[in-house]
Length: 489
Image (tube, rainbow, N blue to C red; front, side, top):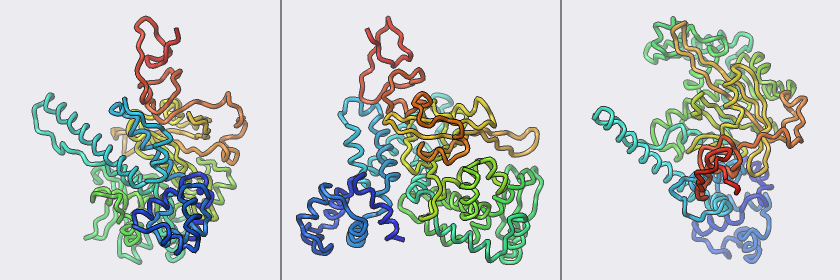
């Protein structure tokens, strides 16, 4: 597996500063150039050229280096480097750095050569934001009612830590895929009668009874398991596909405990809440693997040209579940389109994000309102497409649609979210949604950005903040397309 990863990272030698990463790891290990060169079987002068990025690092050499030095090959991927660089750009886009000369090229070099240090800077900024927000919450509550705030000091949000874990693994977990395939085989699960097959398996293998319960007795829950009574209750409000998913989720918690614990035992998860939330996310992953087995789902996705709604009907999965499964098709040698995914609510809060190719969705500030995921709220239930062009010229093809989450009867609240999946425009022709579109037409590109503070498009009518490290120029006698647009005399 390690060798396959190293060979897959061969092309990164020219795209990222692999040599600098080797140099940093060597110095951390207190090893001289001569010692490392001797162990690698190369000359010290050639190693010096490699470490200063004057020569590319071959896959074989990269693999040998990883056996000697503590280098995480996953940290060299474009997605990981791009993710860290994007987060650093957001950090240094904060107004607190207004007068500091920090170049974007320096930030990207820091992310590529010192990923650990770069991540530490992001963590430090997380702590700063948490302390600032806690102080604001404290002040607001004291001004409002004079009471003592509960949990005044925030920690880093568990969801952010879990997102980092998913990002590090590129949202692909072979252990869980294997576990799902094995369960399908051992339990003789039938796709046409999946609920009955899973319920029968729990009864036979675990002595657990599955019951459908009235919504009023579930006390706002849709799934409830009692280990003492060995009863799993599922709410009557769950539709067929969601009922299958929740049942498969509980099966994952019960049968994949060792794998869940092993993956969740990661230094990135700093609290018990984060570890518990990670286990939930991984159990969801396992459930998706049961409903949508890897090989069958990949073939169907390619045959149907990634028609999300059709795939959802075929595998009895929701639009969101199908989109999420599309992001997990990363098995070496059997890969699907590398999709990114975003889920937002109508207030713009990002509750789910995954960016395997480093799409810079904002973490610390509001996302760009020009993304079609926000426009989807204007046409509920309708699929919207977009060719999104980032400030650096990269173009992505986006598909977005709203989804509703019902939790009961007439008086039950109904939540609405928008889901977006996208990919580099070079993959768009493989998708049914791109039919009839001129993918090369620049007139069809919609200019978008990560956040206003990181976007240089000053002619945007929807700009809400000035761009980073540029002084705000105000002329009270002239009004531009936005308050922050430059004024031309």
